[in-house]
Length: 191
Image (cartoon, rainbow, N blue to C red; front, side, top):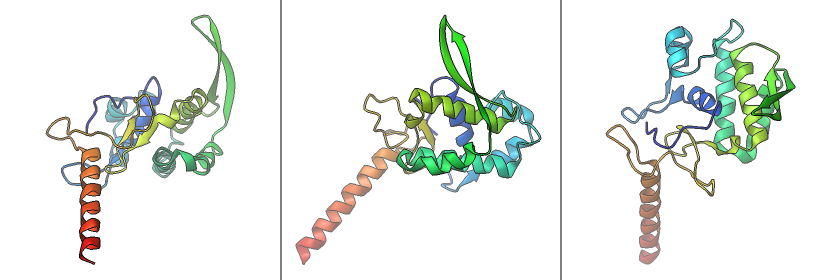
């Protein structure tokens, strides 16, 4: 998948990597879930997802549910409240004041020392900072990306392939829409 200009700022990048443990690879276009394999390999987990270690309470079903809720929220931020509130209800967060470069900031931290709690505290802080709404999933390949555009209206992971393994999801969608409009116009002309 294309990586150029998709990295999320700060800790939110960890959430993006976690979401992308489920993907639709360009080569096969078949849904792939890497989470079961990553959960059984601590080194791969640290390299590909997070340096924050998983705990026994971080079960595969629980992390899969969390990932799905985050994917749903990123696919449609206007409707994300229900999916996110369900997972936030399972983890207790506590507000703490931290001084960062001499400025006091309010941060939410999980009271549970689990990976799920860690991820949800990142998401809660990103929502509070107004950054979470820019974490999106591509309408075509479902890849999670961070929208760095000024307008914040990016809909696809990319408009160009960005390499031999890349996928030009935006271009594919626009060409498909153009072809559909042309076909509709031709049908109306024949009628």
